[in-house]
Length: 280
Image (cartoon, rainbow, N blue to C red; front, side, top):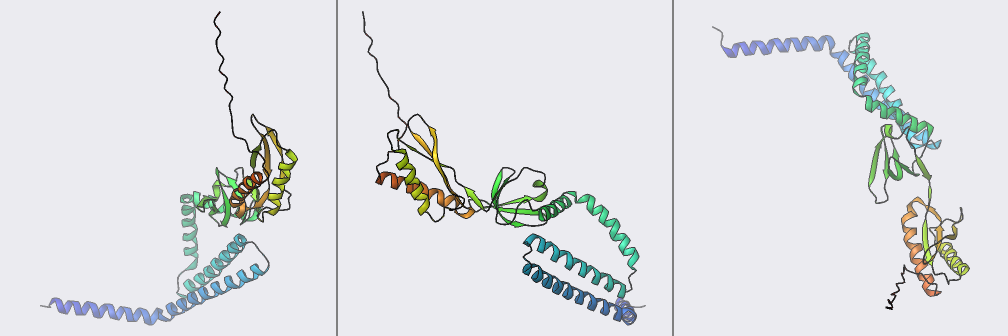
């Protein structure tokens, strides 16, 4: 009777013979396919790099540049994959048909992802906003730091990041502040104050602050006659990054200048009168 060891040796020999026969018949085809695939990866990367440098020299915006490079690399790699499969002896027509059927199923299962993709393409080509601009949408706001095919990233004023799916942006009301923002500050002065003196003091503070833009010119003027003060509106423009620091600096400058020039900044007051009841 044959032992288990003998059976194992025969099985291993049979597998070895089949492997040798397979490599003898298809080895060069597989090697050629791997070489084509490796060359395709290298060529796809090189073409993408060349295209990226060319588009950068043409001052094309980053989202469009990124999309063009990715699509070009995918097309180059896809062509290499088809050639590699053909070299390995794989029938191409059934593979393409199978990919098409699978693509339909994947498309139905990934409607949300595809919606983000189409919205991303819409944003990239219609350009409702650009990287670096400050926008407000969907009750969130921030400076646009990145526009990708599926998401848009905003940098909030507290340095946190807000990532918005692109399908949530397209079709919504969007407030684009651009590259600058306007401060909306208010300071009150007493009714006995020389208003022109107070206005000149505020204009001097804005003129001396390097964060305040000279064009467009700041808006300064009386905005309201309140119960205990005359309110002065201070509305200068700043770069997006200077918005919060400029607000603090201007308020501090106002307090310092008004104290130096003895301009009264009133606080809410109430006058209470006690009437003595006279008995007849």
